[in-house]
Image (cartoon, rainbow, N blue to C red; front, side, top):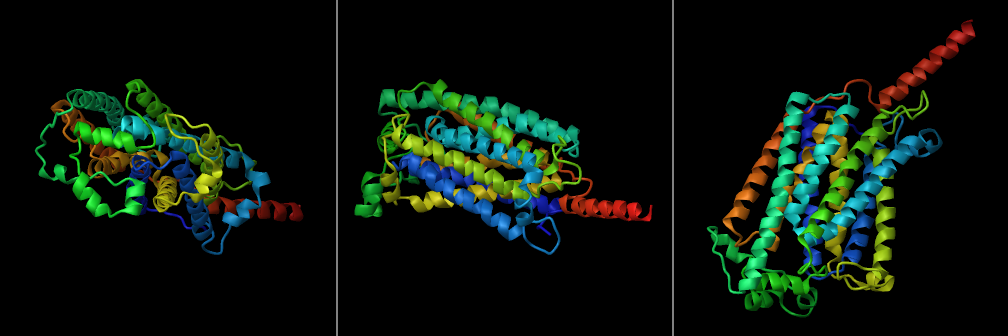
Length: 430
C-alpha cells in the first residue's frame, strides 16, 4: 500500500517541512541570478532535479507495502484514469509557468515581496476552490478569516514594493545617502563575489577589500552590474505585473492535484480507483519539467529583460553554481510533494498554510541579499505589518485543519473489487 499520512499531527509536520523547503529554494535561484548566472541555465538545472524528486517520491513511497493500487500499477492503467492524469498534468503546467515568471519577478520586485504577493494570491483563490472541492472539511469560520488576512497581505506587499522602490530611487539620486539601521548586524552582510572572482581569486580577500554596506546606492549599483537580469530603469508596474501573473498561475496547481486525486468532477468511470497522490505527483512533475525545459531552451536563443543570449552548448559547459540550481530543484520537488501529502490527509485548503513561505524567503532576502537595508521607516512599518498579517493567517489556517472523511484510494479500490465479486456471486446463484 502506498505510504499515507492519516493523522492531523503528521499532516502538520509535513506542512512545516514543506514551508521551509518551499521558502528556501527561491533564495538559491536568486543567489545565482545576482551572481550573474543566466536564468535559462539555472532553470534548466532546476527542472531536472525537480522531476527527479517527483520520480523518487513516487517510486519510494508509492510502492511501499503489498496492497494495491500502487504507483506502477496505476502507470499501466492510464487508459482508465486518463482524465485525472490530464488534470494533474495541467497543474504541473501552471506551476512551471508560474515558477518561470517568478524567476524574473524576483529580480524586478525582490524576493520577499514577490513571494508574499504570489502566496497570498494562491491562498485567496486556490484555498477557496480547495475548500469547496474538499467537501468543506475545513472549518469555514476559522479558514476564511485567514483568507482575509492573506488578502490584506497582498495589498501590503504591493505597498512594500512601491515604498522600497522609491527608497532605492532616492538613494541613487543622492548617491551618498546612508540611512542608519538600529540593527548592528546589518553592516556585516556581504555581497557574494562574482562567479569569475570566486573561481580565480580568494573570495575572502575579495570580500574584505570590496565590501559595501547593503542598502547603499553603491551596493545597489554593484548588484545591478553583476546580475543577469537588468532591472534599473524599468517601470515598477512591470515587476508587479509579473508578480500577479505568477500568482494567478500558482492559484491553479493545488486545486488541480486535489481534483486529480479525489475526482470531485466524477470524470472517472465507475469502479476505476482514484489516482494515489504519488501517481498524480509524478504526472504533475513530468509536465512541469517538459514545459520548463521547452520554454527555457527557447529563451536560450530568444532572451528577455536584458539577459544575454546563449546556446545549448554553453549551458552544458556552465558548471558555475550548478550544484545550487540542482539543489533548488530537489527542495522544490520535495516541498511540493509534502504539501500534497499533507493536503490529502488534512484538506488541501489547510495545506495552503505552506504559502507562509515568504516568512522563510524574507529571512533569506534580508540575510543574503540585503533587501530593505537602510530603507525608510514607512517601508519598515509596511514590511512588519505584512509579516504580522502573514503569521496570523498561517496560525489560523493550521487551526482550521480537518480530516478527510470516507475511504482513501486504496480502500475504495478494495471495496470496488468486493462489490464486483458480490455481483458475480449473485449472478451465479441466480
